[in-house]
Length: 320
Ligand code: UDP
Ligand code: MN
Image (tube, rainbow, N blue to C red; front, side, top):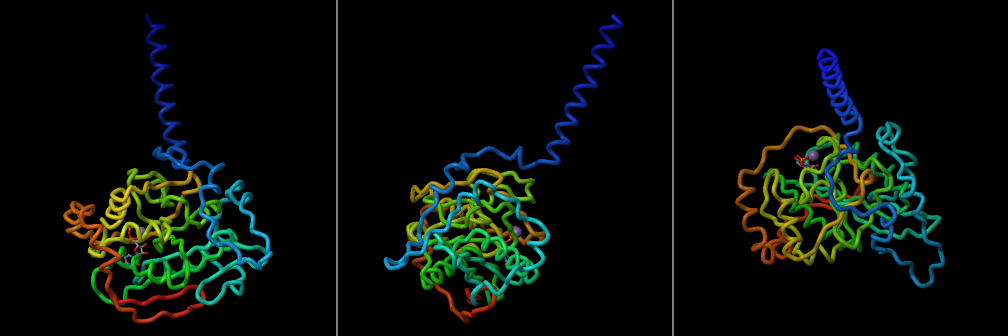
């Protein structure tokens, strides 16, 4: 009897220890326990991308190679890449870059909706130019800045971004929050054949995908797909809802989304205080599908105040 009791006591201690150990491992490696969702594996990553920078017929330069970048998927979020821009002279005016020793296969407009987040923008530009040049793609960073004092309208700024991207002859867009930084180099900044949710694991959410329909933060989409869904809704003023409306438009148009495998899609979020949510966002969402054909890009109305070619980005100042 005494023996049995002793054995049970030992068993309980073991169980507690195992639970504590699991908790400890989870605390150290949260991304390894991220919510499961379908994803494109490492081996299929390159073939899922749209080749959109075909050389002119008289161009004999060789294509850049991306296999090693994906195979190594190097961890990039280290202080030397966040604090200081490397070889800034290699970046063209307006925040454009393309490699000179090979022909980039991917050509992308990075569209950032922005107002009044100066220190985040500075960090973003330093980090992203360090990061994107290592990928050896052709890109340009466009910051679409809301000039008026109305509530911030993220989705409308993306619609405006698509008009600008088209003007600059880009057919692939990456719609990018200013406070999200990709942590691994293998998250190639090109468009996939399907629109892609790029930041499935964000540091603030312990690298977990909050829900499978989440389509905010950082996404890639071709201009063709963006036009097919009539862009985004212009009606979401203030925080929230516009990304779910985006997803509803894709669903209504029968365009599925995709994601890369973790840890390709791990992002660090720069700290900021939470914006006030738009209290009307749920009412708007109810009619998202019905509205998408007659409200969006085809009703977009804005005032372009300036297009400025800055050293690290192209600034598009607009009244919404
Ligand atoms: N944003 C901005 N100024 C604002 C509010 C938002 O520039 O006053 C932009 C910025 O790019 C930001 C994005 O909109 O990353 C999304 O807003 P926020 O970061 O507040 O959303 P959350 O992180 O809470 O989803
Ligand atoms: Mn944010």
